[in-house]
Structures are given as C-alpha cells and as structure tokens.
Length: 372
Image (tube, rainbow, N blue to C red):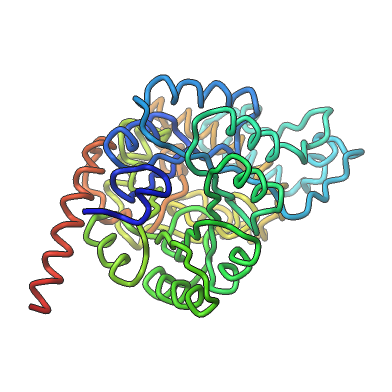
C-alpha cells in the first residue's frame, strides 16, 4: 500500500518511532518504520557519537532527529549554572532530601548540580549542525515554533522539517513559519502535552490546514499504541502516526526494568499531568513521587529550576530501584502516555512495528466491511 509519507522521508510504513534511545531508533527503521532520535539532552559530541552508531547499524534505512531550538534565547550569559541552581528555595531542597532519606537513598546523589559555565543558548543550533553531517531524512523541533534558522537549514539540505503542536492555533503558526510536516499531539501523550484529546485534535488540525489552503501532512500523536488506532487517525486525515510511549516497555528502550514492569502492570488511569518534574505540565506514570509533592503543598518551580532539582533525585531513585529498594521503586516514574493500558508485555521494537502493520491492515479491512 503506497503512503504519502513514504516519498517524503523514504520509509516503508508511516509509523514514526520517537525515542531517546538509539537502539529503538535503529530497530524501528530496520523494521520498516521511521526512527526519530530525541537529541535534546545530548551535547554535540554525544550526538555525533550516537548518530555515528546509528549510521553503522541502521543498514541504510531512513531515520530522523528531534532537536530543540527556542524561539527566543533569553538566557543571560553572565549568569552561571551554579547561580541558577542557587535560586532553588531551601524548602524544596529539604523536601527532596527528605524523600531520598526516607527511601534509604543517599542525599548527596540527588543534590542539584550546576557548573561554572552559563547555559549554552546556541546548543540547539549546534545539534542541528551535527545532524546535517549525517544522512538524516527528517528534522523535528520539539517545542515552540520552528525558527527561521531551522527552516532555512532544512531547505538547504533538502530535508523536511517537522514541528510538534498541541492545538490548532499552534499548527497554523507552524504553517506560517514554513514547516513541512505537522505532528499534532493530543493530551493523552506522554511528556509535555496539551489538554485537547487526540481524537478531537487531529481532524481539527487537518481541517484548519486545508482551510489555510496548504497541502501539509499531519502526523497523529498521543495515546496511539496499536495499528487499529493508527488506521482510525488516518481515516480522519492524518498521514501517519508519531509514537513514543509504545516503545518504553521494550528491551531496547532507555527505561529501567523496574519502570517497564510498572508500565506493563499499569492502566490508562495510572498517569498524571504534573508540573513536579520539569516545571511545565507533562504526563508521567503516577507514583509516590507525586503524592509526596501533593502532601507537601509546594507549587512546582518554573523551568529550568524544577528539572535541575528533580532530575538528579529521579536518577538516584532509579538506581536504587534497580538495586531492589522497594521504597525507591514506589517513587520511580517516567514520562508515558495514557495508552500504556494497551501495553501488555515487554515485546521488542521490531515486533511492535510488525504488529502495527498487521493491526493497521485489520483496521482498514474492518472499516471496509462496516460500510460495505
């Protein structure tokens, strides 16, 4: 079956596998999908290493990179990272220290760390330049309107630029900016997401783009865990699916064995949109971590303070959880969408892609029978 996205990015099946793990990217692309590496947390040197590894293992199959170039880079370069960390109020430090202490985990391991250097506001652009030195077939912007530099670089290299949105208005801004692909993510999705459901958002965005007189493909994202769901989204006008959570229980994923077990056991009501991880609402697996913050009654700190406070703590808890610490296991969490209730085992990425293909065909056959 031919797909519109196939010609644009060179994949066999328009299932886009977003992951922070290179193993997932390679496995998805080799199985006929399209792996997309989330590069926001990498340094340019680390990204070069990761992309070289992907090039050596992907067998010539297409893949992409998701970076982050802020619309406005307003960080004061005279302020060091240590100075930013110092802005975290003492009561917040005390709370995370108590959480670790009560769980029997070293407080030192969870202390926020800065550094003498100021945050690198040009990092996104540097990651973009590294990406274009490799045979990537797609560049995606993770947050906000894709900046002119990214659009221009994509056109220069002949590589389509995608942008993630959570509302119709955001999609139209991206169209004006000149992106080539819209990824519309509903509130069911993991990580940072809006509050409009996928089943409402997709037809709304597709219609708005058509009304604007633009022929631009829309990828559906948010809670999509099966081929049948993908078929439903494409029946509403989507050109494919962009999935992140469905890979998180796979052996190839960056997640811990503890989280994978918790994810498989969880249901669709076991996630929470909380600010108590990054400072902005993001959907995560509900755990004792969120209960502790609710009990304390402390509002989430703004970005980047909340991340600087929480991430070292969560890493320390994950390490303790893997070592068998039951209290740490109860606190362990990760970003994941509401579709986790459809994940019943820890199957591999290649198997998931094949299951999507089968489910997709079954979904369209069912629709044909229903109207026939």
